[in-house]
Image (cartoon, rainbow, N blue to C red; front, side):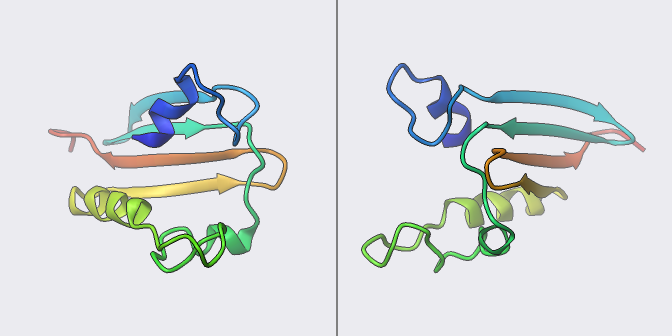
Length: 104
């Protein structure tokens, strides 16, 4: 939810130069919701740790976060997955992919 709401708040959003985009699509029995920004992006090392609750890029003073792990578990419990595409300097895209109800 933070990825969707924060970019559109009237307050400063330090992680992105623009509000970002939300793209939806469906086909081949699945739906996709892609949330993209034009922020700093992430290294492959950071991406590999995103769903690890003990990982933080904010230093030891910040407690472990559970948000992405909880989100991943909810999506997986509904037969879906989350894909991450990011490159340093190019922003990030998180795509939630799930089965379309009633699709065969």
